[in-house]
Image: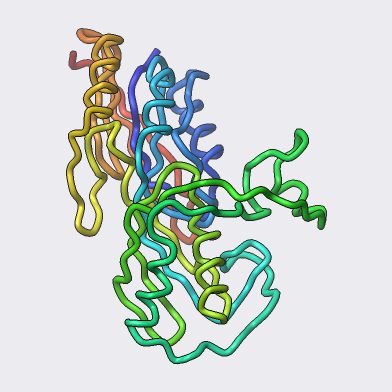
Length: 274
C-alpha cells in the first residue's frame, strides 16, 4: 500500500470526489481521501492523502489556512453564487474607486460570520444541500464563524475584482463574493477561483503568485507524525511523489490537464528505486 500526500493541480469541471476516485483506481487502493473540498469550477491545489497519511488529514484540514486567487464579477446575482449558476438578477455597477473598495473589503477581514451557499456539500437532515438545491428546495442555513486572514485587491475594472484571499477552513469564496456584492449594492458572483496554497501542516505553500514558505509548529507536528509512520512528503503542483515506508518501492503520480478531445486525469509511474 502507498502512504503519503499528493498535491493535485485540479482542473475545472471535476469534483474533489472525482479526483479521489481516480487516485483510488490509479494507486489500486481504497484508503484515499482529501483535506478539503474544492468547487467543481475551481482549479488549483487539492491536498490528497493515501494509506496511513489519511490519519493526518485532520491536522492538515483543521489547523491550516487556505489561499485562493478569486475573480469576482460585480453586477450579477446567481443561484450558485458563481458563474456556473442561473442569473437571478443583474444590477448596474456603481463607479467604485480604490478607497470605496478598500472600505468594503475591510468589513470582511478578520473573524466574520458567513452563510454557506445552498449549492454546497454541507448536510441538512441527512441530505447534502446541493441535492436539495437541484430539487428547487431552499433551506435556511445558519451563519458559521470563519476567519479571513488576508483579503487583498490585486486588480479591478469597472465590473471585475481580482482578490488574493487567505482564509480558515470552512470559508466559501462564493459566499464571500456574494456578501461583498451585497455590501457594494450591486450583487456579485465568482467568475473564477484558483486554490494557491494547501496550508502550513505540510510545511509549505504550493507554487503561485507571491508563494511563501511556512514552518509553523503545526507543520512540524504533522511532519513528526508522518515520520513516525514512514510517510514521505513531496510537494509540488502537477507532479508529486508518494512513498512506501523507507526501503520499499516508490512511485510518482502526475496530474495532467485535459484538452478539447481528452479528459484530464492522473498518471502513475512506478519506480524500483528505494
